[in-house]
Image (cartoon, rainbow, N blue to C red):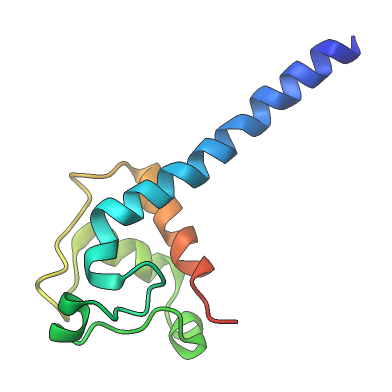
Length: 107
């Protein structure tokens, strides 16, 4: 009985570990070139387009998860270089990216 419980718990917990790796890969593939590894946008494109530093506490508190999700899904009205990803990413990937953006908050 205990062995089955361990197997079931392992299977339940495993997807979250893979999800964390997956969102990091999505960030690297789709977001890093403009927003950088840390969300500070200290990249060539980030500086050229005056992209906001998403690690700033003020930005983190002023923008809702729904707003982040909408920009990822539909693109930005402030910066036309930020294209919509709703056709390229699944809803789960977009939700994971919203959570990932929240981890960028400067300590």
